[in-house]
Length: 345
Ligand SMILES: Cc1cc2nc3c(=O)[nH]c(=O)nc-3n(C[C@H](O)[C@H](O)[C@H](O)COP(=O)(O)O)c2cc1C
Image (cartoon, rainbow, N blue to C red; front, top):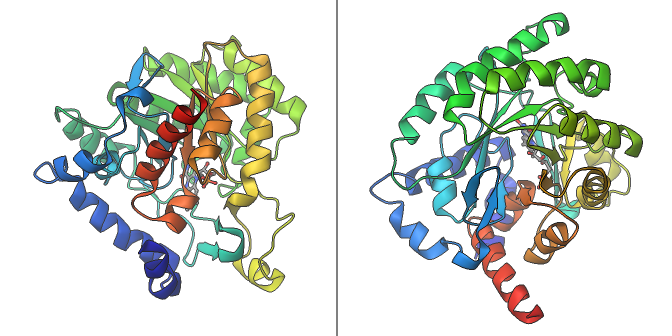
């Protein structure tokens, strides 16, 4: 049903408008009066539960940052079966992001290119919504991803992150420092160990007891990934999220003219799979067993999720395949994981 809807309707809509339409439906699913119904259908099997970051995740599979930037649909996503929802990226100062169009489908690659540029209503508005959510008895596990406000100079980046962290950490199940989006000029430069160390130290102090993670880019060299992983452990972080979107366009099947027309931005989806898995392995090789590693990038099926878990991921996230596979995606993955494990036993 969804493949037909995608081919006939959604793929002809502007991708960002299709996203907004989907958000309206997902938000409705999360309304307190309704959410029991989809949750009853999509609730992950109890055998999938994962204990990590001092939290109980009903499934290892969650929705990656960027889908619900403003904490509008977290309960609906939970109702659809995701084990956690990472909201954001949120910035201390609300911002519009880049001009539209800024989201492009590369259908033959089951990929998208985006240069959203952290469009969001700001950390203050998100705090109001998160506070309201925390009163719900049954609610999603919510990670909060923070980034640098575009108008703030790099010299003041730490203070800007600390502002968001102070506001949002008390309301988050875990907090993520995003230094890996390709769509805020210069942001990925913060991944250099000399600049990252003081940033992570300051945010960790502001985050208090909330587990803190850092999200990294797939375009780092392996030795840079290793250095950041060691730094994260050293700085007392709880984990690493690998990876964000890539600036590479290597190995695509989509017509080069279509890729060219999409222009600059981060590529996500199936073409990211190989590198995301490699980065996971590099990180896992240098961090202690109890350190949380969340793998993201190019995951489409239950077998993909299980492969990440087997390679040492504590949790797994996805975004782009949700656009291609539709609302039952998390449920399919959860059920597929149960089946795969039964087959192994
Ligand atoms: C449209 C779009 C917006 C995104 N926005 C964010 C964001 O705000 N912050 C972030 O950390 N990652 C963002 N991401 C990256 C995803 O969280 C994820 O790391 C990446 O897409 C790889 O996973 P995937 O291949 O399953 O999509 C975005 C991805 C897409 C496609």
